[in-house]
Amino acid sequence: MREPRGFQRMTRQRRLILEVLRNTTSHPTADWVYEQVRRYIPNISLGTVYRNLKLLTEMGEIQELNYGSTHSRFDANIQPHYHFTCKVCGRCFDVDMEVRAQLEREAAARTGFKVDYHRLEFYGTCEECLRKTGREEDAAG
Amino acid sequence: MREPRGFQRMTRQRRLILEVLRNTTSHPTADWVYEQVRRYIPNISLGTVYRNLKLLTEMGEIQELNYGSTHSRFDANIQPHYHFTCKVCGRCFDVDMEVRAQLEREAAARTGFKVDYHRLEFYGTCEECLRKTGREEDAAG
DNA sequence: ATAAATGCAAAACTTTTGCACCCGA
DNA sequence: TCGGGTGCAAAAGTTTTGCATTTAT
Image 1: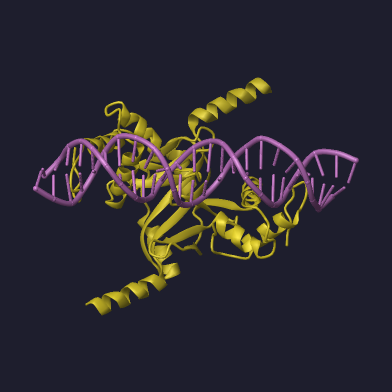
Image 2 (image 1 turned 30 degrees about the horizontal axis):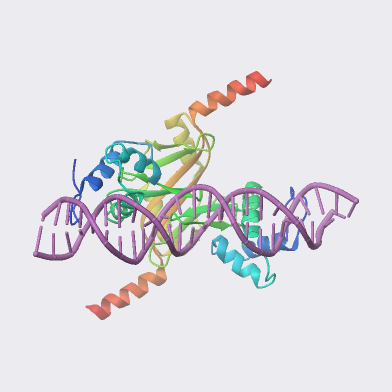
């Protein structure tokens, strides 16, 4: 695993938190990361998880996503990419499509602001939930 | 003011909350709305503000935006539109540019999911903060 | 009249932080 | 060694909720 520069020390906790994030595509919450890491370091504290997630975000090793108002999700894929969130099951998926740099140029031209990056989030119903909903409607009808 | 359908009763509190939201383009937080409404109904409770913001969101009268992890912002402009957030001053602006329906079609084709809508957020530095930063650099240099 | 909505306050929940101790370099 | 990092617990901040009261219809 590539270990980020900028830390003073690479502790067991920090290494494991980063590994957990890099081995999932599920855009987990801080609490989910905490539960996973606890399997291997049972007495790790939630504060440590938060501290490391914050540091990793500031270093650009991961990115923080905001869904709903209550909690953040984290993504170890720091390449620009788009997301799809299912309004039924709440899961968040990566969308494999070209990133539109042109959008940033247009926004900059329209506003006169300096645009560094953009986030594009799609919302709707995922395939699995579409099938389930379809079945329920069949049963009801 | 157009009053939304779906409520059982249109109370003073509810009407004023909606009016405050419709008379700003600043994408305020729940607490900001609370402070504004309190000018006219001093003993309104924060719980009432939250209850109404939630109801209005569910009814599609306003939309909830998520910036940072700590709190939500609300926007009474429910027409599809894009946002720009300044990383220096934290303010959020509407961006007057065409909404790309094509993006939704492409995401749907790529994923096989049903896409209802999308959110596009630009991040960077606003004009005012660009000028300030420029001046500081001049002074420092 | 009556049930939806409010005000109040406590609770729930996520995230941050102070501090003594520990441990990676 | 030694200061950065951790564990613990308390605190801070946002949002939700239970309940008695008020109020729009």
